Image (cartoon, rainbow, N blue to C red; front, side, top):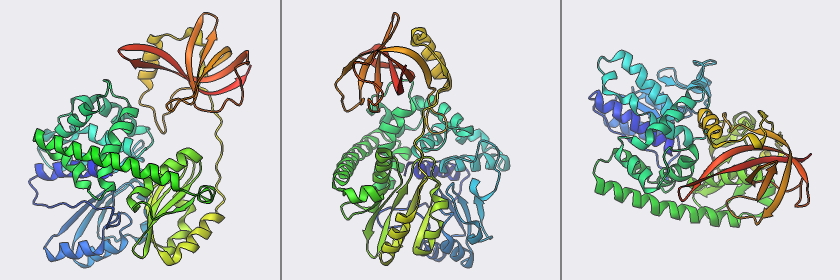
Length: 467
């Protein structure tokens, strides 16, 4: 995925600069697991390798790491996924914030590429002249990985993403610059631009078993080849969209109710994106799996408050592999255990709370100005998990005409208070008001939208209450 590709790109830059003799390999989702396989370690031993470095994987590769020890291969595992420390061989080096109770404040939620970045910073202290090579300037690469993995925008992650979004339009990575230009994104870039337009195109090659396509976009210097790579990525992304749309249409009502989806209509590499789409739509955990040979392989996703890792620990006895994050995991199990996994899943009592919308302060809509929006929101950006948009309260607002719902915004209407009148969008249901409602209280976030070089203020309404 994007995080793994970004992590690999950073590490390759380091190895080239220090003059190391090396080869590299990306895991392929269609015919391999996410973790290191024992067969790879045996292959490395036969070819005379003495050091193995993994990025964005490896922490749950217990058999492979034991095999590496037996073969005399040392390993450096640069991974940010959750693992079981009791199963790890003590012959290797592990750089992972989950293995110690306390990492330096602000670094506990780093991405895989963020871990590699920290590794590079550490190497700069050990190797004279490395700092002058400016590998650490590739902050835009780390920011891509954080956005792609939907990690909390707190601590150093917030710094990486804020600075990365600023640098991205001027990146020296030719392929990334071409991809951004191809999408006709407005400058300055916003997190949503990257998550909606750039990340899917970087993720898609891996879903079709071609992660090298995304990595080559970062490595390639020739303009002609870069354009070919981007066109190939565009074609795969269109195909990915069609597969996911078709899969969503075929999911049965009983599967939606149980949150347990098994299908032969797509490959295991599509399970994660389908599970994420289902969680967004139905606000509950989903396990999505696909039969592959004698195994069931897939992904598990959950709303933000769920800790999947703790909830699903008992399932590990049925799994060949199970790992990932608190809210996103991958798994592989023998098909003979499907009924046991399903039975366990359906017995789980998920503690899913409907979050109430809280507000940060009172801001009357009559006091809103474009300058104020620019100053306040630009200061607080980027917004995302761990750093949500500020929400304001305004009371006694007159509710005006509702327009027809469309695919982009669930509902459009006008809000008026004294001489101030603003267009508003609301993604919820009109449970608390109708077109006859005289006054309402609103929780909202102001935004500025651009169309044909014209700017307008639009209020994004989070919730409404009768005044």
